[in-house]
Image (tube, rainbow, N blue to C red):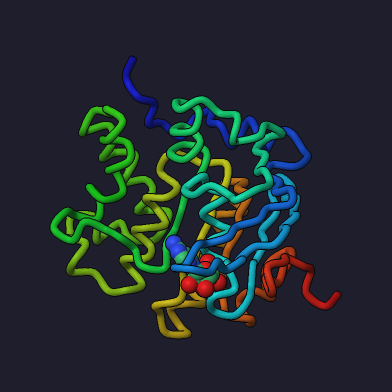
Length: 245
Ligand code: ADP
């Protein structure tokens, strides 16, 4: 069966049609062994994220923001505790469900874009579709639509390595959304950009969040940008707490 590359019915529309909790962490703990000792990064994180929420996670460098996002995305496993996606514990997923969860349910934007520098912007955005066997021309058509969404229609045929930092991050956002995930996770997506570009990228993510009825969790150290989220949570001393409480 050919891979679906259209923008029609998608997993997130199904999820967004329902109200309620999309992702939840219960008593999430993460400890790293470092030589003879161990460090506790997360010491019991609890959070429930409703469908359609835009959440900012703030906290000093080293507080564990990346660690938390990786656990939510099933890119790493907690020392204890559980992540539930649509009320199902992700540690109970079979290997194929887990792959689907990582690749289809979640779109991940990193601080560094991790684009393939020698491929065009369009090919980079199409890559997740091509990797699951989509027709090249169909994948490129879908990719072109997403490049329009992020304002880079004119740069589609340019090599990713030749684009500016802000443009590269736009390509990375388009690539994260090309499979229409339910959940967008972004780890310091504006961290490598100057303030003007950081604001532009944040506003782009806000617009895509709204227009595509996403649920989004953005880790950022930029308090000004975080303040524009629906909810701001502070990660400190291993715990995630509402700001101002
Ligand atoms: P943040 O994203 O808030 O800057 P991180 O999640 O990257 O924080 O890191 C939290 C802490 O966990 C840091 O002290 C970091 O050095 C440590 N850490 C992260 N990954 C590992 C690892 N694989 N092994 C050991 N320590 C790690």
